[in-house]
Image 1 (cartoon, helix red, strand yellow):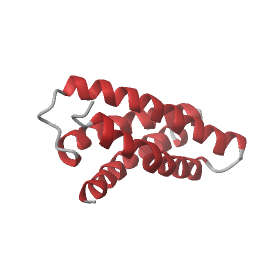
Image 2 (image 1 turned 180 degrees about the vertical axis):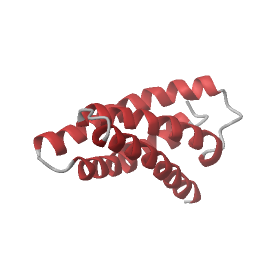
Image 3 (image 1 turned 90 degrees about the vertical axis):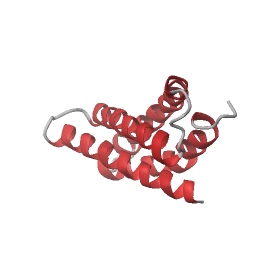
Image 4 (image 1 turned 90 degrees about the horizontal axis):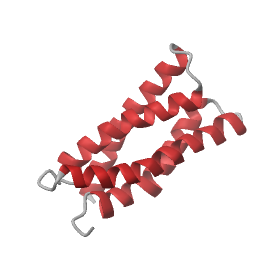
Length: 126
């Protein structure tokens, strides 16, 4: 249970970086909402990997290259799910991009990211 809580703290930190980047690009950079969401997801992914590896799962003794490879595979799905979700909610359903980003991020975090990071990326079982 403690690992789950730490993973959510890491996810929150990564999400803050993700959302900040997305909003800055949309509001001041005049960047398309889907492109901004993808860039935010990249930023959040870097933050999440670093925190997850060293603090949440304490997997710093394992080879970083191996973990990074597994993380990149999971993260590619994360990028597609987040970008696709924002596109569906914001561009198709007409929700504001911030609401679209929050709803999508929460769904992906709980249903996709945590289980795969715990059981695949930072696990010695694979």
